[in-house]
Length: 508
Image 1 (cartoon, rainbow, N blue to C red):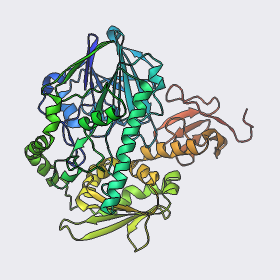
Image 2: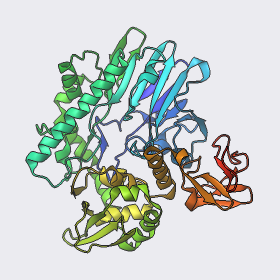
Image 3: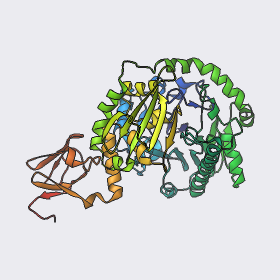
Image 4: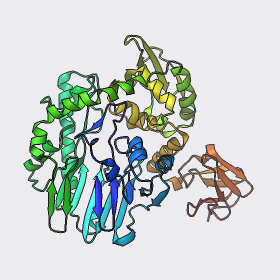
């Protein structure tokens, strides 16, 4: 979505290329728009690092590097680092839930969500105001409520998610009747959540913009909502309007690629490249045409996955075992072994590898019971190891190119761990769970001659593992941040004061 005002333009989450092992494509197709023109903007906003929002190839090729990036206040620097690698140099590092006034009277505010379960370590929403007109691009974000935005004044346009963005229940090894029942429950919950957000904000106009993807690979075609399956979790915009009408909604506005909505304080005039109703009536034909046109793209992607030179067990041990050793909350939360069944190039041979959380090791499967089991192509895991991917949840699981089974209820710690396959992410997640299990102020540790809070004030690294005391200074080795222990002052950045006192001196 591009927001144009007299004071400047903001391009939001431009996603064009396929994501997640060529599994997800934007629908309707936006690849044939005039991106040379659309990419010439004053500001760029990327809500989070999911690859159906952060399209690196498109950002690099089409979006002006003169644009100022409106950067959410995320707990790690990953988004800024990746954007700098793409050539962006101008950043406005926003402060969470604080209004920033840009040139010409354009105002923006970004609400950042920072739980390990929010996107890949962070998700966000963008609020914009110009000349009395207010817009909220909530996108995929799921805040506890929208009062922060409502307090800034009545919102005229509300953009939000309404469709699925997950692999459950389609990939689970369940009877079809159970899949349909669970899918229908999830579909209904998705819509119920959307209605609650709409009712919270009470905007004049509601735009269903985040979702669904479409699936063009023949192996995934069944996931498209074109088969009359009431358990399909990927309803499209036309279904949204139909369901919204059932709960009394009359202010929904659907946008197609190329649509323009002109919003004022008392009106919304929308023009479309083709009639919306006709477009969705021909959905199957549009998907079939896209499938044939994108087939070479899919085949080229598939050809790049195999890396037979990689010893998967050896590489998983090298990458994962140090994280298992340092994990406290995540490992305890998983509480048992997790098994990966890797199907060979021949489609028949299987290598089974266990990530043993209690034993803190990666090893061959030994016929024991496991809490979670994932079955996928060996080539996909080879590719993730080859590129050093730190987020297997949003790269291996979202493609839906796997099957899964589990004992017991959903365990968020399994997915939190495999989303955090780097020391930086893991330490943040460990600290987050630590803070929410008990106040971080409740636990101190002794390092050398000093008693200090256990978690680094920067990104919550465990100082019993990463803290080094030399004289009156502490260095957190995870990021190299230094603190003066006598005063608590951070020597690396403003803020982030640490609590500390000498071991023989009671805390004041």
